[in-house]
Amino acid sequence: MRLSFGLFLALLPAAVRAAPIPVRVAVVVTFDSTDKLTGARGEFSAWQTREKWTGSVTVPGVDHPVLLGPEGVIGVVQGTTSRAGIQMTLLVLSGKFDFSHTYWLINGIAGVDPAVASIGSAAWAHYVIDGDVAYDIDSREGDPRWPYGIMPIGSQAPNQKPAREGWEPEHMAYALNRGLVDWAYSLTKAVPIPDTAAMRAYRALYVGLPNAQRPPFVLTGETFGCNRYWHGRALTQWAEDWTKLWTDGKGTFAMSDMEDQGFAAALQRLAALGKVDFQRVLFLRTASNYCMQPPHGDVSRSLHYGFAGYIPSLEAAYRVGSTVLHELVRNWPQYRDAPPHA
Image (cartoon, rainbow, N blue to C red; front, side, top):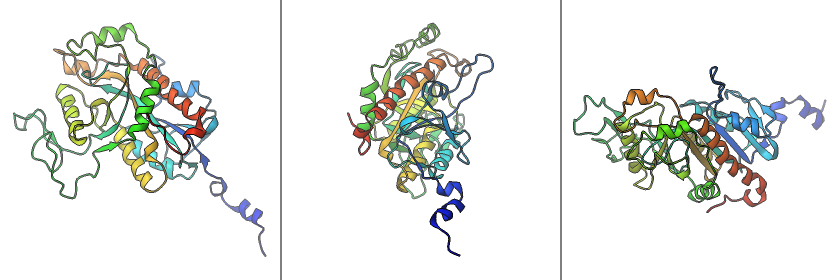
């Protein structure tokens, strides 16, 4: 007996029958939770409450349902540390979405280098730096002349780029589409970011660091991803040096986080498979805290002080990021086939 084509389709599993959903913009954050004491929400809350994301799709292996908005927008929480890259891969390879023309707006809170910017500030990255793969010697056992005990694999000392021996990671710095990044910055550089009395009081402690004492602002600066939550003056110098080293002096460390290296690695490999376009990827980080103590301050106390810029940094991520989101959606015919540039 011969089956009609319609009956054949009806007998197929729903996942096979469903056509992938075309996505214009994917808004990606790393966590969403509610603080039981303050009621403060995570990175996803401002997006979820202000954008019209009413539908949802469950993707196996992705912890949170993917929310669906109008005009081809999705919002997704993809986890912290190495889980972020894994969940990104599972999302793209699920077959539930068509990401061939998608712009990726990856955003979240971060620790900011006080030499570069202040808490509450928002930075668009030209590079994503991988801070995970390294030799690491306890500084108490290393050469006393070294500023820290972290060095590139294959090197003999910190801040020394090794000769390639064939087993080092191919990428320690992921270069993003500079024209697209500069376009996003030019579009958002005047976006006002909220300031508070608590932020003003805390940044006043950073004497001698004028950028740390400024009201929050939008800038360009690199995002530095590392699975370890690090803090302090010596490790901030390491991040500054590491960024200069792996970008050949072209990048400036701005924001520390625990996910972006995983996102960048996943998206670059998915691009090689033709699943995404790496030239359409944006990383936006907003500063909830400084990544080192104030001058003459105690590093442990600074680490556990809390996040004076937490709520403003969530607001900054939405205000700055949504400006780009809305422009892309509003003028989609202009941006569908080629990324904009400054």
